Length: 90
Image (tube, one colour):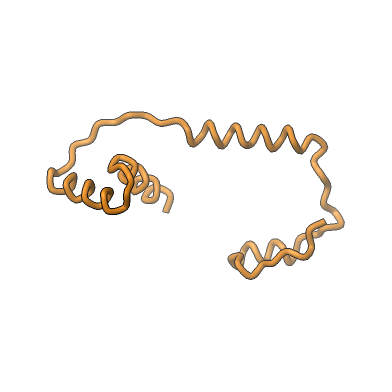
């Protein structure tokens, strides 16, 4: 049973969860290892699917992207993919 969790680093919603969780009613999953493996596969499959696209950008923007990516030591296409991902998930 986990009752002595340090919740200082959690956000308010997470703190509320741990403070109000009924540990007496909690039950273990019978096939925990299999379930962990199943969810790991789902996560891996979800994040490993990539599709190539073609997009037209201003030459100036491409130069700035490449300069920024060079400064951050990451490929510029990775920087673009990261920016798109952050934008659509914010």
